[in-house]
Image (cartoon, rainbow, N blue to C red):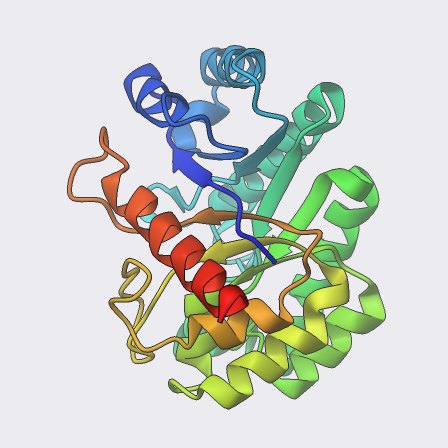
Length: 274
């Protein structure tokens, strides 16, 4: 697979214009709670149309990661935290409706909470997983081919875990595979990462390419971590899209994302020639 130049930005016009000057093939919107207000959704709609008018055909909306200073969590207790539950459901519903209308993709993040938080909210990991899979089933049914679901480092939805992967395959979800999340879950084991990516490749429609040391969420540029990128590129779904989800020194300058694309393109090209 030759990687796409896939870039990510908020709904800020300054960030969007920075990305568009490099003519990305894939564009992912990073949304927040403000984008879910009536005015915010109107602005998001206009920005999607703006990006499409610039020639980008593959557009993804990442659901808001936070609400009221907490993660916007699919694994939220409707009883213990009804406001967060309502935001999670209503924002996902609104984005799926928008995606269907505009023929773009919505990315739902499978989970954020660590095991202690999960057990506090649901009593056990087993119950939490069942709740999350039920909700993901609802989102997938609602949006069909406009919905994808991303893996997490949370044990509720962590690729690399055999039980989670078997369930994901049984439910036939369309997936976004975040390479750093998988690498962290697998404690920096490249052999296991490649096996997990290959196993889920038939259902994976989008990738977050991001490097890591395999210990915690560090969001490194490609080549700065320990992921074996040549091996990864042998097992990804060649029909899938991708972005580079890298921490930026300046949110209005996507230099680290472009550097990562250059690194990966050069690696793949050099190996193919040799």
